[in-house]
Image 1: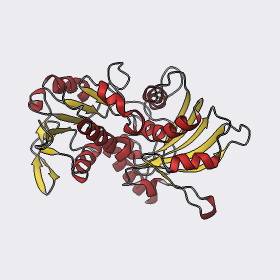
Image 2: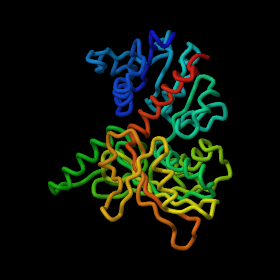
Image 3: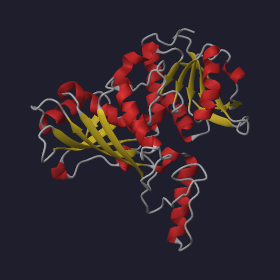
Image 4: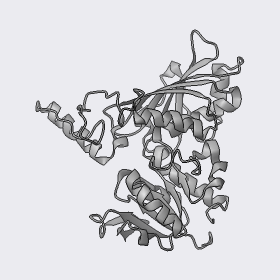
Length: 350
């Protein structure tokens, strides 16, 4: 289908937090949609979503629903993507998948457009959207890598509950009400959606996001480590991560330490290159207490960077603070951004 007429676009998981943001972002970006096809589970079929002033009926996500679809944005969980993504591709759609189902597959590009846009052209029908915490970090890392080289990355994340879904947001609200009213606080959703032990998130910090692996790292931490190496085409890059869930609703924050190769790197040079980098907004003025926060990042498409400083013991070491809206750049916007590049570069047609 040509650009003038627009595209038939499916959004899988249309009732979820990210699916809703995808639809909002398609509208705000005026993406060339001829027909929007919101898809969800059988229990949501028949409900509606709002798009450009109209109520669009949600249909059940099944293989037949992708007939005639040009582009499918998936955000309904890994099991749904594994079940339906290839069905969509078989029917001619290009899939941008926001789950972890295909991220580390060798034949699936894992893309952050500011970092590795050209990888989109190598798709075989599926393009993976990285983990939200990985996306914002590599957007900040790439201009540093280009300017000074990159040897090592150590990151600690401070992640919003919306990263665990709408149920987690409701749980935080309920736990907060219970705590302030003097009632017992119980946990149901966080840190993992399973029969494992849970801790309350309200007024707490949980150093576990997703399940633990045999090496002591969580799946979320391993996603950051492995995805960073794949996106940046640096399999030998040293990366370590600690991922923590905190009791706020939107935007992830990260404390990042990097060691660069160029010993001429400086704080001033780093600020200069980050201030000019695509997708980055520099907010860094200690004298006026200017730095990004999760609240200030909410609703913004860019990655916000601040508190850049040189390590006190290693002149090639630098610390900085990165914040981004996890539902936008960390999910919906990065997916739509990939879709925009597919159209712009004529990579949508296979």
